[in-house]
Image (cartoon, one colour):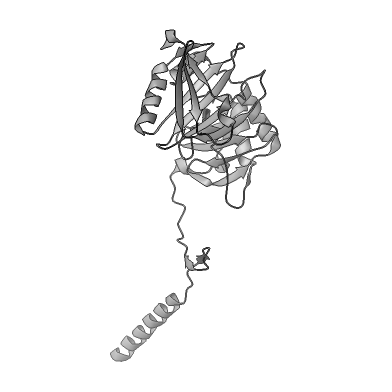
Length: 286
């Protein structure tokens, strides 16, 4: 009798093992037609990583905005902060009414970084806003491969909020910008440091902020990756200029000493987009 029970137990174990071996592992096919297993992960993210579509606007303390310096990171130099509930609602509604984009993204450097701050959690996104049309998109900083299209209404509202920001020369100086106020410069040591790093092949980036007569900021961003300089120009905050953003890659920065001072320009650039950059530092500022 005991031997009979042992045999039944062994048969039962074999049946379980056999069933388990017949369970199919999900697979996906790569470009060569070869299949490989898909690793299924449980959603065990911490609260600060939860997507914004499950957030309540009333829980958000403030929304921080900065000019983006690149993918996957948040620029800590604040451009503006929104704490009024009506403005917080506009930002969160823009996220929660967006539509996921199918396919592979082919996008330029983000225009802005946006951080949503609550008492016990934080989430950041990269934001793009079109100039000529009321369109835009965002990605999570932690997942730049998945994009979401904003509604035209939301994009228009966000552009309105951002246009109302007043980025003073004092704030620019505090953020570490090289500030140009009609030929008078602040933080020139940052420019000198950037030039030295370019000569030494060390990664660095610098933002030059010039101010119009009306006091509107115009941004010139140079991002050196150790080999080339990515240059971006943005005058969308200039109320009296034709709003545009241009971006290109250049080999290096060139300097020429003239009677008026030292003039800096970009060389070896793709196309002629770098014509918008020119920095003339008078002798008294050197």
